[in-house]
Amino acid sequence: MYNFGLIGVAGFIAPRHLKAIKDTGNNLLAALDKHDCVGIMDSHFPNADFFVEFERFDRHIDKLKRQGAKIDYVSICTPNYLHDSHIRFALRQGADAICEKPIVLNPWNIDALQEIERETGKKVYTVLQLRLHPAIIELKKKIEEGPKNKVYDIDLTYITSRGRWYGISWKGDTQKSGGVATNIGVHFFDMLTWIFGNVKSNLVHISEPHKAAGFLELEKARVRWFLSVDYNDIPSEIKSKGQRTFRSIAIEGKEIEFSEGFTDLHTNTYKKIIEGKGFGLEEARQSIQTVYSIRNAQVLGLKGNYHPFCTNNL
Image (cartoon, rainbow, N blue to C red; front, top):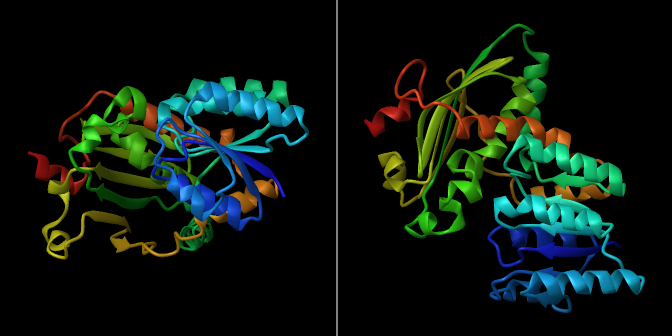
């Protein structure tokens, strides 16, 4: 049994991490969040200590270490811009870090964290759960076994509606979240480059606070992508069903079905990490470079090979 700490326990994604820690037979000793709506802890680790101030959490983790009950892993579920700092904290406390995506906002942050890995002998892991999805694994196998020189045409569409709160929260601040492409798209970009190879060119057609679109040329794919948190971008037939999310990946015009199978992906991620087979900093580099380039690219407008949904924004 391993001992865990968790930073950001009041966040949206934290319950998946709490479940993963419990399902893998491990124990949460302490959690931190500046917000105290953390009743979810009762369903998993009611005896874990909870802190709303980082300084007291830091002191407690240090005390546990000196008492022989050190933290083995720190799970990080905080806003994107804080990941780098909280990973550093974990490593310097002698723990491995398990961090939600995007692991950092900038490629050079990866280099700095790798240096701290070498200094401390500890490891940084990230959650790239789509790589563990059965349908995605099957797709990767199919592409690898397919024609070696074939370049596939792909349309990626992901619209996950958010209310007015989104723009007021840290997620609506590009300096803190990295923008829409980073916040809701990074795991898709990781999945695509994992299957279809490195990025050869990266063009951006739309870059707005609530949506982004562009074109990625990969070694084995041409990808038109559209990402949005704007309900108005949802197709009318989806709205008519009362749904607020639309997700589609079409390869050569054929839809890839992977709407099911997400339930245990975080638990499977934790199992891999505990076995020493988790995804580390280098695995995350390509997707972080991709979203960084998108965030800093010149916006072309509707020129070239753009996603069909872009025309809804004329």
